[in-house]
Length: 321
Image (cartoon, rainbow, N blue to C red; front, side):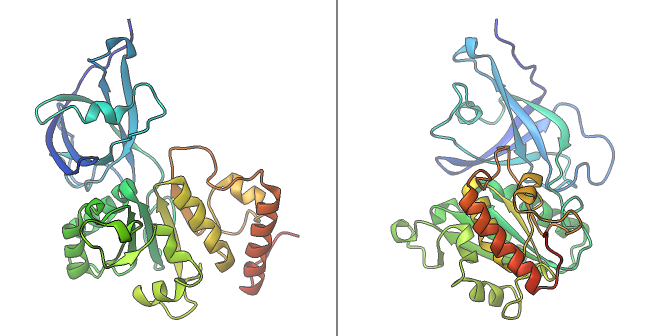
């Protein structure tokens, strides 16, 4: 018989933003001990369900970024999209979409992960942190901004710029809450809709995917919108954090290499011959271990390497021979 999970939490609230996008708030059976933050914003947890409709498939567990602030102990929040064309025969989201408040669920209440400010650019780094979210990649960044607002409500968050890319404007989850943070803390918020011409709500804001902000013709407007001088989107003033689709991660990195931004990923660094001593300035979270840039594409890597090293030379940084 297929192995099943022992449920240890309850779905308390479910908020359906669209038919394929929802917020799930769960409460563990065992109260979270202690006081203050119980995880680091940017971390994830594993949740799971048993396939009761097809028991022979057993159970499924998946890591999910936590959207709630670590100061909140009553509920744990997840921002999840239904995976329509799943690669697995037993996709978690297909099971999640069948449950309702009051139903039971498995949650491993031991958050983990290094996609945090402390483990990437540094909690106290004064540079602007541009947070690039594709769809539900918003979750870790929302946790970061929420936690800051709780811990230090008077603190400016003008050092955070949140780019959120979605297909349609209805997919812009948490938009009212984020706008409130913009008004209260100075957080920069740049939503964008990739299918703007077909948007049922008549989107009139920025059109395009999240990574479109880094196209050469868009960089000037981006710099102005986040308070940078022309040409100011460089590693000495900015760090980049990306969460979401592999395409968004890969395109953001490739478009910023010419500005001298250095990816944190070791395989990419080796392929681009980046000296060990040069610090990273692009960090990303992805559950797919495949690099977002094809390191086996020799022509592509040669072009990107030349572009990056020319930028590093222009900025006075040491490059590999």
